[in-house]
Image 1 (cartoon, rainbow, N blue to C red):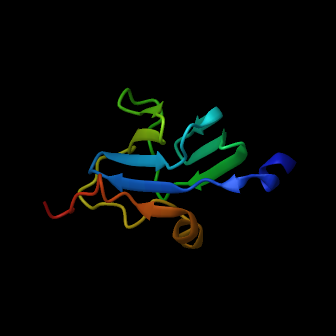
Image 2: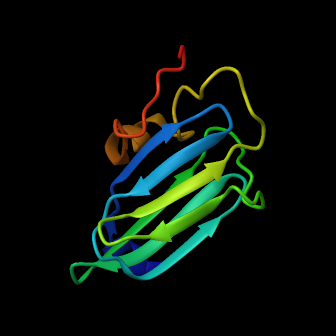
Image 3: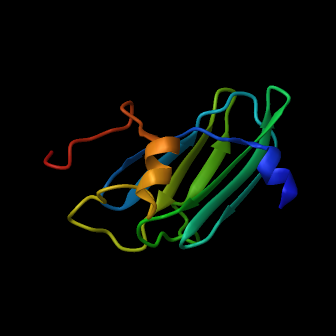
Length: 119
């Protein structure tokens, strides 16, 4: 785990729908990416601009990594992910992560993908 302590924290943006999360790791030209997704957590390691980055995100509620709708792509400007929630909910999640402090420091709303829960 020593390598992670030298790595920089990857910036994360997110939005949601009733059945899914849209998560973006906002790093350009990511190389050597390693992404692990479980029902409780997303782990990311990768290199961008010659620097190592990581993210360890423990979700507020369970997701479904096995769902065929769960997928991700490494694009030139970011890594784009669609992660299906374990259960579709009428109420949107109040936040992405269990840890409010971590979320405040590392995650931001992806206004490009945001929808008003009332709509």
